[in-house]
Length: 287
Image 1 (cartoon, rainbow, N blue to C red):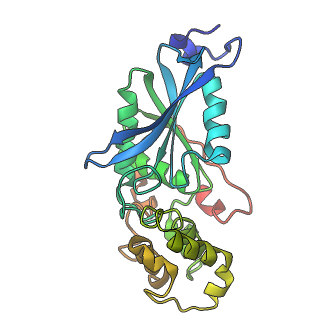
Image 2 (image 1 turned 30 degrees about the vertical axis):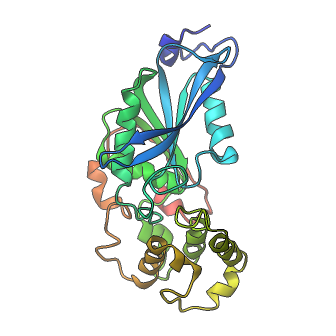
């Protein structure tokens, strides 16, 4: 059996049987501005106890709930921990169990790169980490990887952005000039479970009803501030009208949280895997 201390170097050998898994739920990791982000830590175990030693870490940051069984827990946490990795999954600022109410603006989050940097370096300081951190994630979970890479965390070792835009204006929100209407739906998906209304069943019902009748909302265009359910969540309504009104590429779209391309010279020089689908709308950005 491979010893935990040597597992990263044992490329031709595997443990005789998969590791068990133990989880530390909602560890609140502090960011540089004092906000804390909820983080689940999945560790290799034997007989219900963490295996001693240090391990490489696979890190995922998400706006879609780190407890999502189909997106994160089964394909990432359960698979890789059994094979000798620690997996760290984190809710983004302003989402689910993390702090930062009112600071979530869909993909226009100015803190994203710094939050990723701070968490990578926090991971590297933990006694169970060997200091090598790789990241994974699709769509928005790929955007946050690219954003973090511009900050160059010293212990970030590799990234895997999947089906994700490098330029949100060109590849996602205004592909061809007009607002991509799927972005209207995206904001509702991020609204019904937002901090602002998670304890308000009436507002949640309004959001779910809007999701079920998005075609009717589209026919009500032009959208006007205060006239959609997004008005219940001012930060998401602001994002909608930035997407909707800003037809020309301007200083807002040029923020590095929305367009990484002008800042690629700052990207950390590390291995990356970039994946997507041939008919996916993000195939251009993947190339």
